[in-house]
Length: 118
Image (cartoon, rainbow, N blue to C red; front, side, top):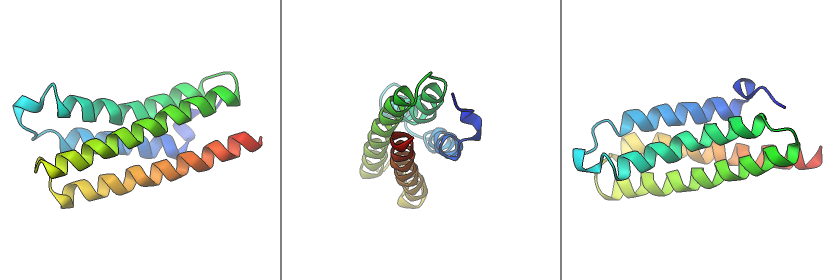
């Protein structure tokens, strides 16, 4: 079992989630139950799965939840790209979030590899 609060990947994923909530504040009201909701849910899924995996009993279980978090990262990237294509968010506002998601994805792969070796 790991203290998820101490994991840099979890901290960065929480930052991403916060950024996504702020970025979607001004999305059109008609997107409240569409893209806004979906984007926020995939964002919060990343740190949630990291935390859940960290609380599991085995490294294999932790690695499985990291895989789920990674899937959520790619889902989030798709939704961010779509938001940009639909002009719901500017390139200047979305690019830093995209870069952070890519960084967390790389961290996730590294963490999974390190767990596999232990």
